[in-house]
Image (cartoon, rainbow, N blue to C red; front, side):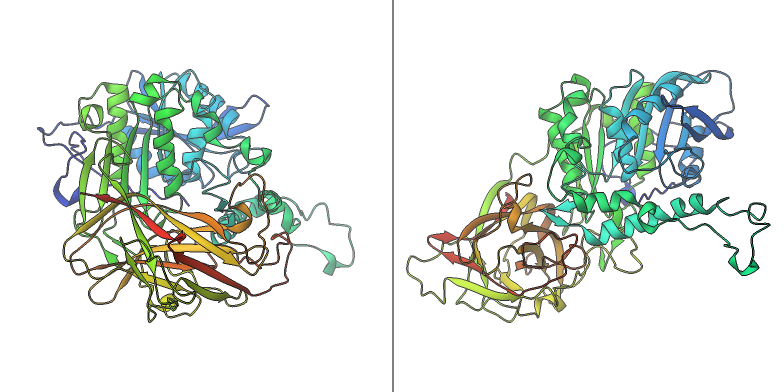
Length: 600
């Protein structure tokens, strides 16, 4: 779940939000030679938390006299994985501390997702600040869950925390992490929990069965080689996620969004197109503008959006089946160090004085600096859904235009229906996925297979005569009916190339019981018309001349999301399935539309 990539260097350039060769984030000023220290490494250094639990870290520091600022990573993925960045940071004049979080690898205690990260984060920051070779200033870094350990520490306001640099992480561990639009993130939750449980199993079995304790037991065949715990004990949080499908107090206690006012430090937000946490990464940046009480946090926020994230490394130019060109890769580790050069060393570079936002614009495949996010100049534009009543599959007659629906349409022309069968769901083809990319590949792929199905409505514009840029949040505004008491509606934004390649850009889902509130679900009335909104998060893509813009509407995206069984029963324990006839209306009274931020 966490991916970092380091590139060894002797000379670093001052970083700026300006394009350099091969897309590297570097400045246009004269190169600055960074001191390159020899490195001393200390392993398994103990830090005692407030409840007596001991967490252990590896410390990489310059082999030199004096005190240095500290960069801290708290990870559940094995602190040994942080060696490359740690060596690079220590050579550059930082004390780099890589700590196993509670209950993981070398640290004591029991691991439970998110629960202990605030207190343990506070205690570790203050412990690191007091190290004899620390100058008392601590910054945090890392991605995914390691981004969560940063935010959850920052909301407790440790006195010596001076900055965080979270990469591809969420803002709310219910919406945009465990659930999206009310649907369970099945592929991510199951693959991630399975990965986490491997170390839990190792810890549980080590020493659980010893030859000494069993020396007198007969028969000899009864000897257990390993004591294997109950499967539910390996990842108790997984069952708790399922037990709390609503946004209730369980989730509110963990949500960063409930505590933004407590963040007092500058934040470098790193996000990625095709990342599973894109929505939360962008939301973290946006909400820091309005919810934080800290002036340093408001003025010190930055956002960079690259491609990949959990779908690929930040040094990759090809994600999925699309090559985004030589400008796409970035030196993300170097950027993080440059960020802390500003905060801790007073460096004068683009991160200190440049624009707040830098995004990679797909289609044109180039980097661009922006004053803020979302872009103020982007104009929300409605593309209305039209058909003669046969938008099912790409072979149908569904179209998208800026023209509002006609006043008089026959019943057949004003709606499109399909049968959603949970026993035969629309398969996930790429997109923002994590984890186990060897089994289910993330990123952009041709959606042709899904678009041939009769349970996928397809609406497409004519080929564009001129380039059209879409940059910002994307939503679908739909009028729908269903024959079931509960069902899902999915939406996917697609760029259709002249050769027919249908590139997925971004996507979303809404579980009907959560159409009005994620806290208080309400079943649907079969046959009733509902006005709903499906959040597709965001993108930045130029639809080049000759390309078409496409919207797919369906009711499943499996196994990325769990299948809605259409019965209204509790999803965690239900197994009975029924088919649902789902309908999208698009007449003058029900003007279903795709809402796009068009950049002039």
